[in-house]
Image 1 (cartoon, rainbow, N blue to C red):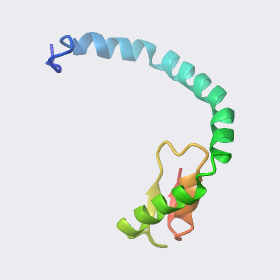
Image 2 (cartoon, helix red, strand yellow):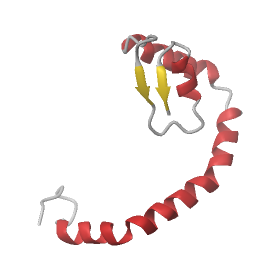
Image 3 (cartoon, rainbow, N blue to C red):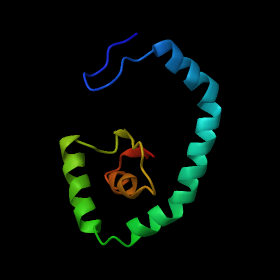
Length: 97
């Protein structure tokens, strides 16, 4: 058994791995269904949030800090509808998200 933080029970890694292996496909399918149902309302909320200026400033800071340019490659994980991906792509970087 592996140790865990003091406020948690010990972890049985063998049992955990077995459970993950046996349910991985089912869990993936459930997760896909959940997020596919959430996506339209999430996108609508983002599109109407009125925070475009804030996000542009965040991306400007990130692109300057990371020195993004036309030779850069960016992987935007958890990109949602791609608002930040589009802003980073404006630097000329190749963005996947």
